[in-house]
Image 1 (tube, rainbow, N blue to C red):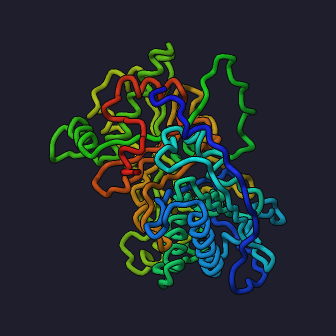
Image 2 (cartoon, rainbow, N blue to C red):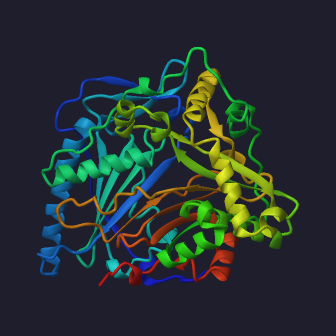
Length: 472
């Protein structure tokens, strides 16, 4: 594909130390139940990483770089131990309760696995465009124990990569972002701006509950699922790539997808519509135009659930856990391919309309309650591509890349890394570290879909290189 292999894809990584970091204050044994919305998540891991340039105070020789790395690791560990006192869910382990549902056990001997490593590569040479080769299994740690794992990696140039992997059943991106900002604040000896809330009663079901029939089209008990089909011999692989999209291109997409200024769709809706058309075109090329294509967009329910209530808005704003829904739309491949971009953007807007409401999330909580203790999943996650190509878009516009400063400056780059095991593709656009309206886009799609996007939308999707990030 576009950028090919590079030196920055084939570096040696050496792990020098692994230890458990426990909360600085003893945590009493505590059983923390998962909410109904947590129970909709499968046991998948989410990765996030931040790249930092060499601290200005270091000379650059190996001994000075090592001394600086050891100092930074010491800051990270001390601040992590302090932060876990408030974010105690990340210091626990997930265990089944008496009916087999997962819950969190927090106890004194818990903690977070912290890995220290050295990578034989300079930051400017790191091939961020291809995270499958440079990030996966190298810079982002594997979570083998507990809810959270952390890795700090020294780079040959004296730069640093700080990465985390967490259990998605315990936290969504909003919650992880809160933790990352609090960890950075603690490292700089600042008070935590937002103290997390684990008040599960905020997401209690209603009695009696009320469930809209549309939820049966979005979610499904796993006991009703057919076994997954074996992939075809010539089936494409899902792979991950990271792209850079300039603000000018985003504005252009928004103009093309908005019929009038009075009916201007959001950048995320326009971007999603454009991607939907691209995967529909890929399906046409693959001769599956008679099939159905699906697009899902992840919606955060915090603001929706607190609709009209300032006190609840404050509570939900600090809530730690999953408050997500994945509404999706389904259309004939030929229809999405043939219709103009503004029509597709209108369809994206329509699929969101029913899910961006308080009633949708209250109904979803009630729906899970009606099916407990049977685990349930989003249909588009499990078999989204069964009838044709499908993808899920998650807005990462609240990604706090400019706030994760542990005391040696803001990250030069940061991104989520989420090669989920779902049947649909996954895409997350986040703001560029430059703060200029550009986007960095993590994409986990089929190889052929990405090849088509690179071939036909090269001006929009530019393979991420160090040139866009100002690496020396």
